[in-house]
Length: 269
Length: 269
Image (cartoon, rainbow over all chains, first blue to last red; front, side):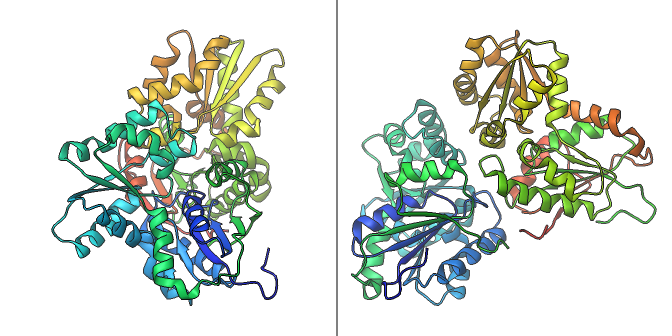
């Protein structure tokens, strides 16, 4: 669905799949007078296990599709794409591009933690994007990272509050906890869905920092001039694969059906 | 790498990723005088959560790429592609096409079990390809199916013999076991990697039937005339994404490095 003539340009949000709807939800809450178009590249997800060059190709492809929708700015909600492809997406896009890494780093620094953990997909952790940004902003911090490959499948299975997830989380996060981590940045848009299990495992002394609300704050702080104030929180969700599986996960994350859920072709390349 | 002029045409094997290497391994063991070219569509995996139309598009794409390598016949090692796309692949290919569903069904029937379980990805189970083939060959059987979405990620994590996998398997297979299942067909090429955990969970009274060796038997029985007998078990592995992750899983499954591991573009469409 195209916006009606004269309608304010929506904010574009892109993710490898439906996990980025956690970011969309935070944006809708923070910016109720904007409209949104969300593209989930469900035909090619996940990005987190794939190589940098494949992730860049897919991300630029998806960004170009959203730019064709006449968006005001683009939020790359996918952590793996933000880690590997942000520069490539910026070069390909005539609108401002906001990734999730920098807002997530700002948010974890705001906790005052001195020992910071970063968790994410294999791709996000291997890229070291979070580790570099933390080092750049505060070289005195202790930083440790852990890839958690089973977290996305567990979130998609709906096991965010489940003894199996507790066991898997204890396995992945054990080294961070032994080290004395004080705050952990959730470097994957699916991970907020696992917070019930994660909180049990890390205990009350460790802060879990979700970049979703930090992204909304960054959009307001850095790109306030682009906000139209003339929207109504309308959400269009576009997916590159229309499987019922993704529709169900989308509904579970958003807590409602989007106004429009469409299948699109982004010229897979 | 192209075969040398005059070299016998290899057998082509296609899978969404590297799980199909379990089928390749069985083929190499059964047919040591053939050569093989394996295509894993790692840039677009998994197929198991995606829609029938996307799986068909990807499978035909990959099959055409292998046909361009002048193969003698094509084995569709991916259960989801065999379930959703076998007819489409046959229409697109000038060589005989062997799927995994029919050999798997023959193998489970050969056990004499009267209560048969089928496990696989969401796509494979939803397609009902196994259920229909079992019904067609023996309408008197009891058949129950269970989708096991976490099994592929657990296999890729290398947790085929792990307490977490035991717990997850008990969850997915519980209803089959309560019903009194006698044999379970492993309807996904990754699942043989989970056999240690699965055997603990189902106990000695339930047969686990892996279609990999059944596929090799089907190739010999149905397409023996196409076998060249002039190869030497050479294995070329082509992947559409070159992530180290997939290379590592490939090595773990094959138990050795393939002679050639190449990154290819199959004209993603």
